[in-house]
Structures are given as C-alpha cells and as structure tokens.
Image (cartoon, rainbow, N blue to C red; front, side, top):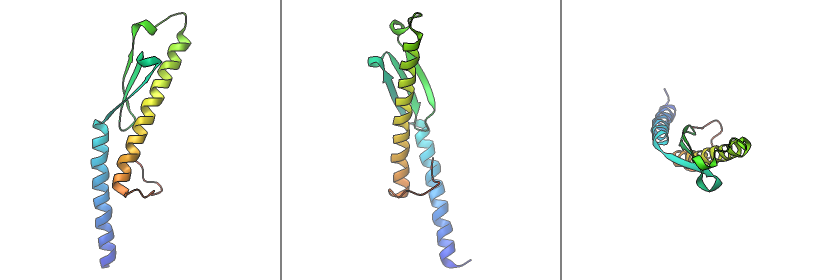
Length: 105
C-alpha cells in the first residue's frame, strides 16, 4: 500500500473513532424545548431522540385539545432544533468547521 494511502486510512480510522465518541456524548446530552410559558416541556438528547414530555395539568382542557396539541408540537420542534444545533456544533469539532457532504451523526 502506498505510504500516502496508508496515512489516509489512518486518518479515516481516527475520524471514525472520534465520530463514535461524539455520538456517545450526544446520547448523554440533554436539551429542553418548551411552549406556553413552560406548561409543556420536551426533553431530547443530542441525537434528537425525544426522552420526556411534561404537561402541566392546568393546560389540559378537554374542550381545547387543539391548543394542547399545538403546544406539544411547538415544544417538540424546539427541542429537536436545539438537539440539531448541538449535533452541528459537535460535528464541527470533528471536521474543523469543514462541511463534508454525506457526513452526519
């Protein structure tokens, strides 16, 4: 194997190991989205997996289910957006800010 190719393979293996480490770290990170002044809260991890949804009892109104649905949706979207930002920040650490097509966590 040519020397340059061997060095490139080592770099790729190093990057893969760092990517696995980042994925593990992201699984442990927590972000929170909320809506309605905090009456609906959603917790996600850095991998954009929803872990918890908390709904304050005072917002549960059987006559206005649509409002509750909207609040839950807004909180979920906010939590996922924060998780995506966290992913991007961690990925930038790996790539040094370079945008590499097809490289995502």
